[in-house]
Length: 297
Ligand SMILES: Nc1ncnc2c1ncn2[C@@H]1O[C@H](COP(=O)(O)OP(=O)(O)O)[C@@H](O)[C@H]1O
Ligand SMILES: [Mg+2]
Image 1 (cartoon, rainbow, N blue to C red):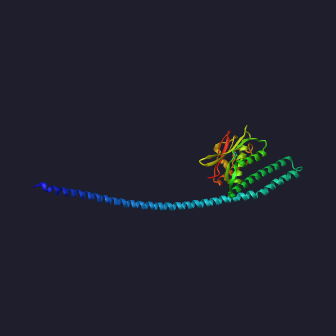
Image 2: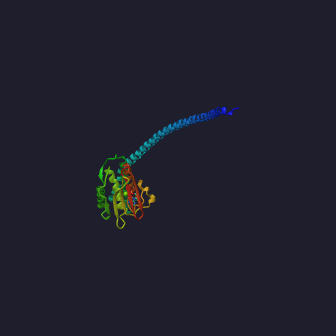
Image 3: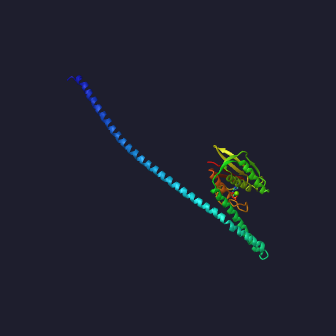
């Protein structure tokens, strides 16, 4: 048999077989692809469902946070209202206790012995202290209730007049002080007066016993954020207790060392956060203290 004649036919058959095999492979691959596509589509739908569920949960969560915040600020308002009226209503009876004790001491001094007069003076002293505490509480609640009224305020001038007022009241204390000039801020004048008044009076108070008391008030700009500082070289304190200071009635020094009631910094913090700013402190025992604050976000 002449094989040379059948050769092209064989080639065609072989080629056709290869083609069929390839076609089958392609068909298989296509089937596989379709399967994978279906699986992918299923996964996509599942993901979409999960995304939708998550979005729903987020909305629900936001609603809950909003509701809790609303309830919380309601509760805070109620506490503030309560403290406001309490501090107001207790003033009159307190003045009575002090006043009637004074009358007893004056009008009955012949009938009362020394011990009784000592006790009465004790009552007066406590009543007066309570009066100061109530006044401070009253001012504190007033800060919360007041709506912010921003205007351009020259803080340098404000600090200068506060320092002069304070030093006129305590002529025995003569700190050296430096106030950076030209510090202008868009803020609530009356409220910021409380901030500077408290920080500067603390600086004077807690540096009065060091050899050369020095107080600085100035500004630093960092990342376009203005930060004010009030610094003294006074007694300082242990930084472990730094966060306590900004809470009501918290003091790190006793009344025998330095007089006070511990409400000033709580008030300062309220004013600063009302402005959207923050306050922090750095201190070292025996070296001095620096308060820093901002009045914007
Ligand atoms: N400049 C300062 N140096 C050292 N301690 C300070 C300074 N300012 C505040 N403190 C500490 O923080 C406490 C709270 O301050 P504040 O609220 O103003 O209350 P007060 O002045 O009535 O003591 C102070 O009693 C004191 O212990
Ligand atoms: Mg103070």
